[in-house]
Structure formats: C-alpha cells, structure tokens
Length: 202
Image 1 (cartoon, rainbow, N blue to C red):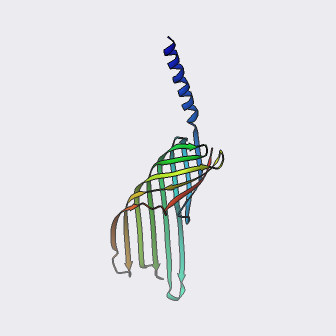
Image 2 (cartoon, rainbow, N blue to C red; image 1 turned 90 degrees about the vertical axis):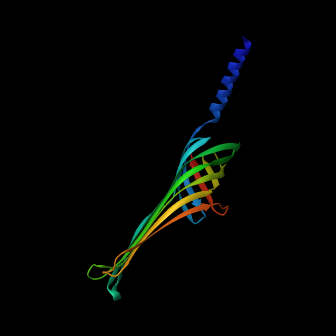
Image 3 (tube, one colour; image 1 turned 135 degrees about the vertical axis):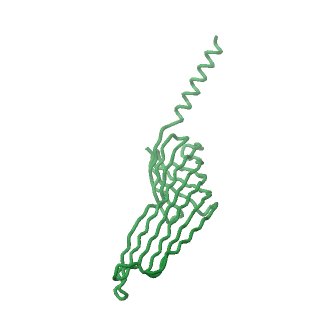
C-alpha cells in the first residue's frame, strides 16, 4: 500500500515542478538585421515554446517630378513588405541565458513602377518590376535576460528561398510593352548575417 502512495506522491511532485517551470509569456520589441535594417517582432507562448511574427520591411512611397525643360512628368511608386511567421523552442541554460531553435516561413514582396508622361498625358516611357520570394529558415540562437522584462537576443538564420521577378517596359507611345520573367532558387548560410533583438517580456 505504501509503494502506490509513494509513487502517486512522486508523480504529483514531478507534475507540480514541471508546471512551475512552464510559464506563459509574451514578448514584443525591435529586431535588427545586418545593422542596416530593422523591424518589429511579437512572440507568444510559454518559456519553452513560442509562436513568432516579425517584419523587417514595410514601406511605400510616391515620387513626382516635373521635368520642365523636356516638358515631361515623372511618377514613381515603390512598395514592399517582408514578413516571417514561425515557431521557436527554448531551453533554459542558466538563470539568465536561453538557447533558442526553430523555423520560420517567410514572404517578401517588392514592386517599383515608373512612368514618363508627355504634355498630351501619353506615357512615353514605362517600367515596372515586381518580385515575390517565399522561403523557410531555421532559427539558431540565444537570449540573454538583462532582468525579468528586458531581453536581448541573437540568431543566425540559414534559409532556402524561391523567388520570381516580372519586369515590364515600354519606350515610345506607339511601341508595345515587353515582358520578362525570371525564377531563382537561393540558399543562405552565413555567420555575417545575424538577427539581433531587443524585446520586452510581459
């Protein structure tokens, strides 16, 4: 009779310890890639497993220029977005050091469109280039806890990607548009490309 009771007690204690170590957390903050681009990240889950959503690019602009000497108007539209969604797992090495690993799915889109319009509002020159890239990257990194809420981290992200680019151009009102398409498969593995993060944990 004592052995089953002892076994139940040990299982209860083990479950209690496990439950105490698994904590619900959320993280939000800034990410820096190659020290020349930055974005935002949000992570939610437990201290052992989190979903993550990040962006390192989200932009759009319009440029207008009137070329008085040639009586032309120039318009350019540029837009782009780069999103990643994934899952990461963590192992607590010490009180303030965590090992991180997992994977992201990523998507990138960019488009640049430019037009030269003559005084009759006819398009004399036209160009448009749009690109899509899909990929998957691994997550290999660590976190260092400055305190209970502030965390700095670093990751290397080996990646495989597939991209397509479509380019259209036209010179002269009477000419036809020409179109070119290209496809690229790429692989990246470099310790020079490190993603740094500074997040607030709550």
